[in-house]
Amino acid sequence: MSRPKSKEMDLTVGNPFWSLLKFAIPVILGNLFQLFYTLADSVIVGKTLGADSLAAVGATSIIIYFVFCFINGFTGGFGICLGQRCGAKDEKGMRKSVAVSTLLSIIFTIVLTLICCLLAHQILRWMQIPEDISGEAYDYMFVVLLGTGATVFYNMISNMLRALGDSKTPLYFLVFSSVLNIFLDILFIVPFHMGVAGAAWATILSQFLSALFSLLVGLKNFPVLHLRREDFHDISGTISLHLKTGFPMGFQMSVMCIGQLAMQGAVNALGTEAIAGYTAATKVDQFSVLMNAAFGIAISNYVAQNYGAGLWDRIRKGTAACLLQTSIANALMCVMIIFGRHLVVPMFVTQPTAEIIWYSDYYLMTVAPFYLLLGVLQIYRSAIQSMGNSWTPFTACIIELIFRITSTTVFAGIIGYVGICFATPFAWIGAIALLVPVYWHEILKRRKK
Image (cartoon, rainbow, N blue to C red; front, side, top):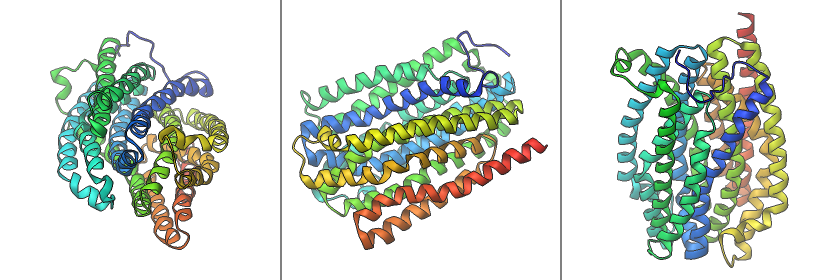
C-alpha cells in the first residue's frame, strides 16, 4: 500500500491511552473552533443587532443543527468504511471508498439543498416562530441551508483525513476560517448592513475555505485521495456498504435532533425572552456536546482501524481509556459552566433582563451535572458503530428521542420550563441503558471467536 508523505497515525499500534489522546486533542480543538462559527454569529448578532435578532438566530439554530447532524453522521459513516480498509491495509478498498464517498456526497448535497430551501417557509411555521422575529429567522436559516454543500464538503474531507490518521489538518484550517468568520461577521453586519443574513454568509464562506484548504493538503499528503477512472469501476458493493453505514449514522444523528426540535418548539411558545435565554445557554452547552463528540470521533476511528485489523482486546482497552479521558474532561467542563453561568447571557446581550438570565442559568444548572452520562453515551455508541453494528446505536437514538419528547410534552405541560430542561439528561439515561450491555456483548462475542 502506498504510504502517505506526511506522518500517518496508525491506531493499531502503541499505547491505546496515548494514541487516542494524541488523536483526540486536534479533533476536540477542531470541534470547538467549528462551534465558533455559530457562536461568533450569535455574539456579534446579539451585540450589534439586539436580543430580537439573537432570538431569530437561536429559534432556527436547531433546524440548522438538525441538518448538520445528518451530514456529520452520513459522512462519518463513510469515514468508518475508509478506516476499516485502512486498518486492513487494503489500498484498492481505500481508493474505492474515497471514490464512492465523493460520488454519494455530491448527490446527497444536491438533494438535501433542494429539499431544505423549498421547505424553508414551512419549517418556520412548524417551529412556531414568533411573528416579530420570523423575517430575520427566515433570512438566516435560508442562507445557511443554501450553503449546505460547503458543510458536506468539509465533513467529507475531514472524515476522510481522520480515517487515514490525520486529525491535525482539519484543525489548522478551522482555526484560520474561524478567525476569518469573525472578521466577515463584523464586515457583513456593520459596514455592509446585511443583518442576520450577513452572519450566515460569513459562516458558509469560512467553512467552504476550510474544506478547500483541507482537501489541497490531503491531496498532497495522501496518494490514496488521488482518484483514477478505475476507482469508479465495480463499485456497487462499495456503494451498498457505504449507504448501509452512512444512512443509519445520519438518521441516528438527526433523530437525536428531532427531540431537540420538540424542545425548541416548546421554548418558542414561551416567548422571545425564553428563546433568548435558552439560546445563550445552549450555545455554551454545545462546548460539552462537541467535546464529547470529538472523543466519539476519536474512538470511532480507533475502533474502525482495529476492527479492520481484528484486534479485539485492543478495542476493549482503547474504549476504557477513552471513557477515562472523557470523564475527566466532562467533570472539568461541569465545574466551569456551573461557576461561570452568570457570565453567559452578557456575552450575547448587552442589557439582558432578569428573565433572560434565569432561563439560561436554570438550563445550565440542570444539564451540566449530567455531562458524564453524555460522555458514556458517545463513547459506547461510537465504538459499537465502528464494530459494524449500526442498528443498536440507531435504536438507542430512538429511545433517546422517545424519552426527550416524553419529557418535553408531558413534564413540560405539568412543570413548564423545568420539564424542558430535564428532557436532555432523561434522554441520555434511556440511551445508555441499551448501549452499555450491547457493547460488552459485542466484545465478549468477538473475543470468544
